[in-house]
Image (cartoon, rainbow, N blue to C red):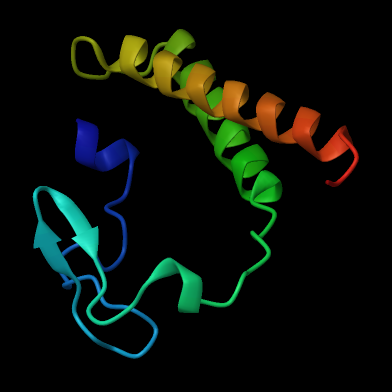
Length: 104
């Protein structure tokens, strides 16, 4: 079953809040922070998520290996996991290639 292979993301039932603890507002389907504009926010360096993506990819490979070895899963589950693993691998490739480029 789907819920047994992938755990729920932590905090998915909590409302989204900014760093000051203010809830965000839905406006036309997008999230906006109260009383904040992009110009006033400090520029932040994005964290390197490649190690976590590599862990995810290893997990997908392990699960797909178990399925190929005979593990029983719901119909379509193997295809879904294969697509997700492919997306993670593609994102990892993009991040690796952008890390090789000189900074602007």
